[in-house]
Length: 230
Image 1 (cartoon, rainbow, N blue to C red):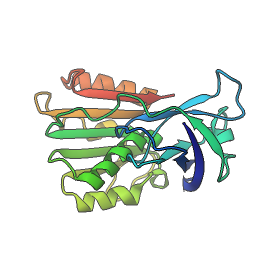
Image 2: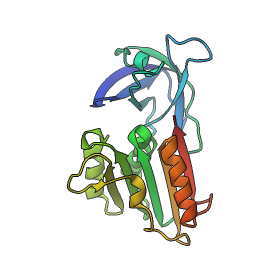
Image 3: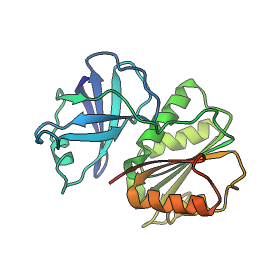
Image 4: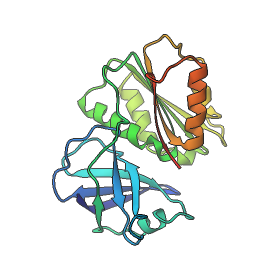
């Protein structure tokens, strides 16, 4: 599908939110899925990048939350996009979506722009009603200024008593945030026999650590799900 860039928001120093409007209604997609972008200016067979959709299903518009890698090939070119840019995308795809039925506890664990698929899920529930499950978002960053969608998540936590927002900062200590890494916030807090699903999205190293920790806690592959990026 082809889409036009209609807005850009600088969310943090190295992260921008890109808003696209497709030239036709987007096929129904599930919150948590991704699209594959063809990046103009890169050689064929090297010009595609996958990005999770950060917004809930909405006719022909969608949002991507992208972090700049100044040493990379694709994001410096994406950073040159201007309003009106035409970009080719695949249709939404992927299996990193909420499994049904939703259990008593759902724990989202992420770092950086790994929050994008969870933001899509939370936006969907904001518009359609949260399930009765207790939903925990554990979001790791280095500094407070890096917390994407911070005010939005705080507002959700105030509006919906079964949604809980847990920021973790590895380089800074502030009130109402854990000083350390994301793993500290779920270790030992859930028993392997409880009805709980873990969804983990972020850097490969973080996902690998989470997998080992969850195994040690006694959880099995039907209870945790991963989406990682390099």
